[in-house]
Image 1 (cartoon, rainbow, N blue to C red):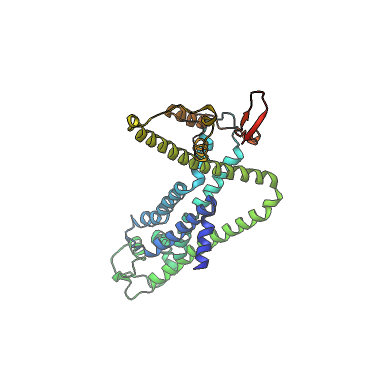
Image 2: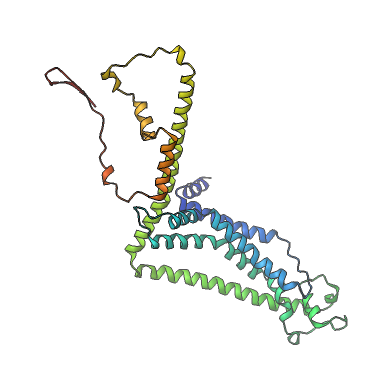
Length: 329
């Protein structure tokens, strides 16, 4: 149970871990779907290859599209690529990094499906049993009245009566399955070698550039998440203020309003300061629409020095000669 909690905490730590977890789940789902899928070859020369290749490649396309849609890097990459430049220039290296990360995760489940089908061999037997030269095998049933192509097309159907007392079907199936498994293991070996070589030679390139690219890609992801969270807080506070004003306006005739002294008018409670902090001085719909449009058209430049120091409100009481009697921050 503790290990499960640690795994869940890892996947919830950041969006990259969540994307990795979703891709792993998709890969496991693809294996489960294939094992539960009842593969029945039509055993008809015109449809065997079409059906088998469809089973082998159509589900990977669907899994790839699902991987692209659920990957957070896809949205971040498209927003960064399509946004107006404004005050912040676009970094093509960051877009390439996000595209590469998205493709690597989206291709995991399709590759698992293709490898499983190749190692299992059923699809390959159905698609290419008619391409086998029957001269290399004994026990060909020649008393059925069928031509050679139709006999080979029925090899995937082990319940067919023409192979009842013949070892021909098993020999052809083993032969084609060996080819299928050889291709599957070769692809797996190539992927492992490619990943190992890429991991080894990666430090040989400019590692500082890679770190910068990865930092700013994480920054874009985090900026979008913080912007969404800030919008939610702002919308909540804006809605609360509008609702409170509505109910207060219903009782205007029962409220006695008196002018507040100047010294007390400047005093605000801590909660009022928090409300203004969340609203950031935006009190109308037009202001909010203009702010969101400005955010889209002109992202702020990456310079936070002007936000390093923020002025605080200081209330000072002086006598008639200008001497400070009391100061409150």
